[in-house]
Length: 168
Image 1 (cartoon, rainbow, N blue to C red):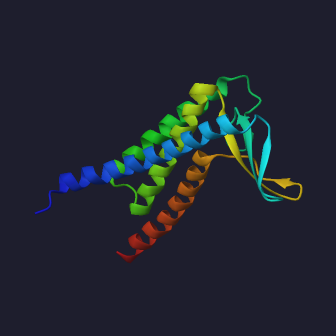
Image 2 (cartoon, rainbow, N blue to C red):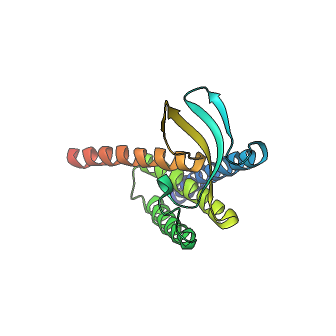
Image 3 (cartoon, rainbow, N blue to C red):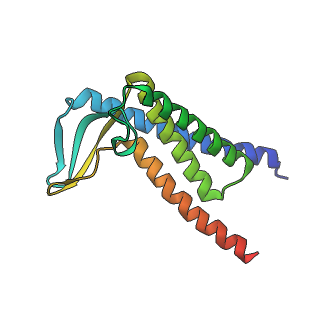
């Protein structure tokens, strides 16, 4: 017979492991950039479309509050802590669907990865730069990628949850 408490702990640990893997991938990629790409340099990967670069973002998404005097580091770290706690409790309580749990773990890992940067460096290290002609998407990193993918998965999970609720 299957012990449901064991299944529950296994489920929680699997999402914790996913979040930890996101943090490791993010931090490893940033350390690689710090060791291999000169600050403010661009290394073309796909000419005219994608470069590796090495830039810093003291703000949030799209450099929001990047020009502030430093207090934003604490604001974003605190916000990440609140979001992480909310999502972790949501996973634990079964608030989300399975896809939502995966999304939450991805967002938690991404948030922690960027908080580590803010604590260690006072800014986030960004290095993925996509562009077309003279139109650039702001540089971002692995943590940002997982946060965005997690957000999309949350939307999909919300639609799926809504359909399940309507079916009952």
